[in-house]
Length: 476
Ligand code: D5M
Ligand code: FE
Ligand code: ZN
Image 1: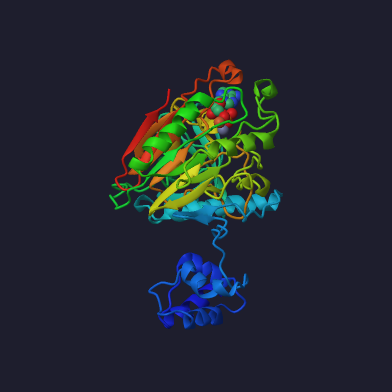
Image 2 (image 1 turned 90 degrees about the horizontal axis):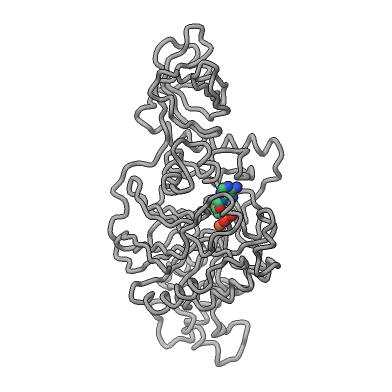
C-alpha cells in the first residue's frame, strides 16, 4: 500500500519528505488528501514537507487532517540514520521443542554451507554417504556433532550433513591435531576415506571465514560512533564518577568530532539474581528502578545523539540468544532518541554495517579454543568470524533459542564488529573488519575477584564512520 501510494504520487511529479509521507499514509484516503493539499498550495514544492501540509490545513483547525507540530511517533525499528538490518525482535517464533532444534540446526548448516560451498578449496564437494564410497581425495561439508580424543591420542570428530554422518579422524601425527574444532560448528573437510569406508582421515579443515578485503573504503561521512558497554547500573560497583566524566566529555568534545551515535552492546543494568549473592552488591534492588536510573543518566546525553541499546545477560529479557529488545514497559522509560534492538543485531549507520553482539559466547570460547582467554576477547571475535557464527557451541554457558532462522550466523560481513561482556577494552582489525571490545562502567565485583577476573573499565572505543579510524578514550 505504502509503495503504491508513493509511486502514484511520484508519477505525477509529487514527492513527499519522509515525515510528510508517514502522516499522509495514515489518512483514510492518502491520494485525495495530498491532491487536496496541493490544490491549496500557491505552488507545488520540490518536496512536500510536513510544514507545507500544516500551512495548507492547520488554519482550518481540523485535527484529523492537520499535522500536529509535535514530532511524529518514531517507527519502531528505524530512526534517523540507524537502520536495523537483522534482529530477532518481533520475529521470534520458537517454542523450544525437539522439532524446533532440528530445524534450527538445519538452518545453521544450510546457511554456513552456502558460504563454504563458494570456497575454491571445496569445489567438487560431495555428501557424506557419497564421500564414504570414494577411494580418492574427498571433500564435504558438515556440522560437528561431537569432538573427542581417542585413547591413542587422535582427535575424532563426528560430523553430519543432511544425508548422513561419519567419524572424521585427525591423526595424532597431523599438523591439525591442535586445531580447535567446536561442537556444532559447520566446517569443510578434505581427506581420504579409510580402506573399509567407515571413516574419513582428515587432511585439511576449511572454515567459512570472512573474505580478505581492504575494509572500510573512505566515505564522506563525518560522524563518529562511540561504543559504551556493560554499564551495570544498579550495581554498587557502578563507576558513577567516571560515567559522569565521560558524559561531560561527550557534551563538550562530542560535537567537534561528529559524535552522533552511541552503541551500547548489553548489560545496560546489573539486573537481579544473575550470579550468587548478587543482592549484596546491589545499590538498586529492583530491576525496573535500575532501568529508571539508567534512563535518568541517559537524559544527559545530548538530544542529537542517536543511542542504540542492546540487552546482555544481565538485562530484563530472555537469556536465550538471540535476545529480543527490552520490553515496552522499559522502552517507555527512555526518550525516543534511544533505539532498543535485540542481541545480536546488524545495524546500518551512514552506509556502514555494524554487527553488535553482547558476547556471552566468549565464556564458552575460552574453554573450547586453545590459546584463548578472557584477556583476548578480540581473538575470540576472530574465532567467531572464522566460523561465521557468534555462538557455535550448544549446551555450554550460552543458552540458544531454536528460532526458525539462526540469527547468530554471520551471513553478512560487517564493517565493524563490536562485543562487550568481558569488561575489557580493545580495538583490532581482522581482514578489514574493525573489531571493538567496549569496556565496562563497573568496577571489579567480589564475584569477579573470586574468579581472578580483572576488568578494564571506563574506556570508550570510537570509530569514525568516514575514515574508519579507531581510538580509545580513557576516563580513568
Ligand atoms: O560478565 C563479566 C565477566 O565476568 C565475564 O566476561 C567473565 C567474568 N565471569 C563471569 N562469570 C565467571 C566465572 N564463573 N568464571 C570466570 N569469569 C567469570 P557479566 O556478564 O557482566 O557478569
Ligand atoms: Fe557485563
Ligand atoms: Zn555480560
